[in-house]
Length: 449
Ligand code: TRP
Image 1 (cartoon, rainbow, N blue to C red):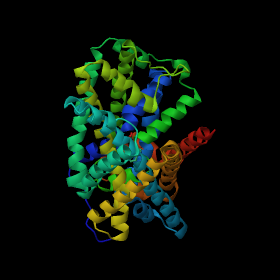
Image 2 (image 1 turned 60 degrees about the vertical axis):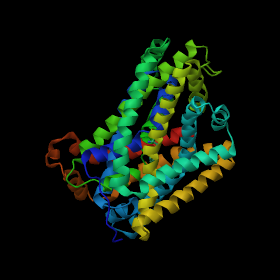
Image 3 (image 1 turned 45 degrees about the horizontal axis):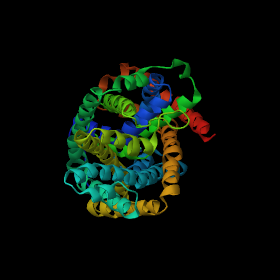
Image 4 (image 1 turned 90 degrees about the vertical axis):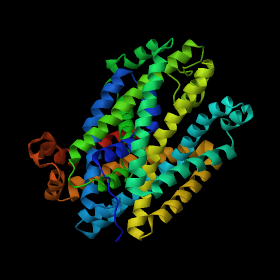
């Protein structure tokens, strides 16, 4: 374990990397449709409260575990453990997170591959390669394997370079690109007919639904998925932050960026759907709800781009590049979880470990692709609806019940001397001990029904 560890070279480097992990397909695709089908602004309102009051404290737990342990999730948790039982528990929680990250990457890579293929389609059209354009957006085994491989290649390429040269450098390049594209697309969509109706549907609150348990569960699940909790990723990112940084405010800034980008994505997707409707594209499913999931991204939006003529080629290209970039900054963090584990625990060199694990996860993706209909949903549900909440909850339990209170306080104080006067200091330790695990457990049990 004598390998020298990477570290983010700057505050902004960490913020971009962690926000890159958090901002992904979940924000740009999941959040807007959930909002539309859950009472518009009422969902946004509940989401904001849950993101800051529940997901943020759990997020802080993971960051603090990592920075205290200065290592991967398993080693960090074991450093806090005082008995053999604790150490075993630490292994289960930490390793569970690593496996969960690998599982998420195995299906996320397939969907990200589709995003890339849809970004290539307008280019192929533009250069007159109509047949290829059609091929890249038609379901086929070869297409799926090829594009998943391309996407995994990019992910491996970044992670092989390590923390500063890989994760930090690329997040600092890609995140501004993502935000720029998002704002450009919003600006354009707002000039089109139907956008204001969409804006209304997005921002018109139906407050009668605020206490609807279904809405609460969706908002909470969305918040946890979005902050990449329960996957060991935020623990390892926390371990790359200098002890001199104020973690409490860094965590809050990342949460704020994550929430803001989800909100911005809503300003793009929902109005775009109503613009599509004004062009005669069906945007409601049979049960009256807005079309969501893959139907939205791969049918409704491309149909909208088709109605825009040559401008549609550019808009479609920009949109799917946006999606691919969002996916890439998330996927690199998913690969970093397992890679850092193997590098630190088994003393394998980073480049080798990255290639090996990347290829292993690619083979898992191929397994899923071969049975796409059943496997994609199965793995996604297993990892995000079971794995993530359970492990995030266990991390809170670990911090609240096993980690020494004095050590926790010392870690919070590191880089932040004045914290003793803040509400965070007064509330958070208690909150993480009782409120977070209970709330996550309640939501989890509800979602099983
Ligand atoms: N936060 C990502 C998104 O919104 C998805 C995600 C879930 C994730 N779990 C993760 C990313 C673990 C990295 C690591 O799309």
